[in-house]
Image (cartoon, rainbow, N blue to C red; front, side):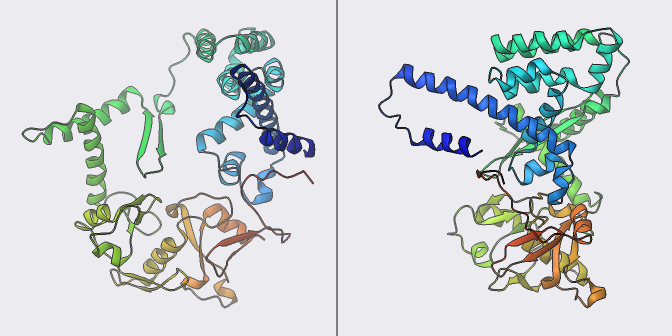
Length: 403
């Protein structure tokens, strides 16, 4: 590890300003191969972490959750890395090409579909030699473009089960939502024929009911507006499942002065899922919303709650959610509606049910802190987490020699 770090420091110190095109391209090729080799080692280590149940050391259940919280990977990246690590155990030729830097992590992720348990079983039932498939795909990956490899893999999987039993159509349903820096979201979904028909029927009813004169919206814009309206209708109806004693709602946090001052600019208010919006957008939402007063003290913690509801527990939960924003356990990204309000000092031990003695923890980590782990809020508002052996859990990738 020391040698690797020294090599990286030497590369970073090189002056590239005087290098010619061919020299730069040679450097680029070398670095691409090096990245592939490092990715192979990362995948191999990830698999060993999974086999050893290493995430439990940091209070987490799985490698995908550890990679999201400690490695700051997206859910898609974390899942892909874990799948690659698993697949390489069954694909030695691909693993060797990967370790040599000849193929990329993206190519291995494509080939990994071949090593999924169901596909391995089908191959065995048809006396297909997986070693031969592995070797052939390693050659294709090394010499052909990524798209060509994807087509070869898709063709193999199609021939593997050309007339299999009718699968459960709901098993293929997928919805992924990506949040961008400006707070907007984009996504994609995959629905079976019946599920897709239901969605189209619901959206089309709203599209046809909202066709004002002179409407210049495109078809795509009309459908997007209908989708938001569908969510509006469901939230307004009040029939959605209750989330942790609170009905689902759109929450916006903004300082009172910013809400009132029309000169306040963008990036002023924070929504329930962490999106930052402008004060103008918050005022627009407030036109048709219940406004609750929450007074914050100098340490950023709520000290005076409004009286929208008479049940104190509901106000306390709202205060904890506003302060903590998510599960406070190191490396966890669970949103507020997955979380319990935890007593830092158990009430059986004299702990009071108040904001200062509360922390927002997801169900898993709520259990963890009752079995040896510990969380504490620092004077500056930051949360810190310790293991049962009193060592602190630190998050983020750190380039340092292994102990």
